[in-house]
Image (cartoon, rainbow, N blue to C red; front, side, top):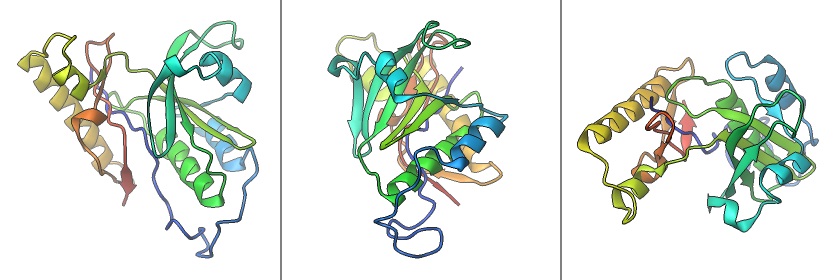
Length: 219
């Protein structure tokens, strides 16, 4: 099985404008916006878990540096572990915790919220699952299923890992293509704007799941 990993946000509006078209740099949204709560309750395709920031500290061992998987302009991504004793009803699960980097502006929140809504409403075997989110005070965090094998780029050029057989490479390409086709044929088509090997992630359990992570744009 292959999976395309969406790890970035969709910008719904121009960077300097609100939905009403007015500048919004100084505006703030409440810590738990109704849109996110409605999505958590009503998203049949991919029900989301609302985590507290204290729970995320436990999941990531207090955001320890040796848990960092990567980062970029958006912030940092940490490896984490959800355990049975974290909260009743949760199953053990390794996760990737994406912490958005300190943009508490109205626009920063809208971009984060767009990503939650976008990823929360999509479900496909070739898309990595968004497990949940944290929207608490200034914290804006997304929690994804963890891709254990890393990126295609790392697997192709690693001096430690065994080379990928051509048969596997073709399966990865086919899986990524199916994920892209799903996005393009969605009710609201989505364009992936940064398709490259570093943004295709692989899962160890199902041999390889190809996830894409970066910039998307909705038509």
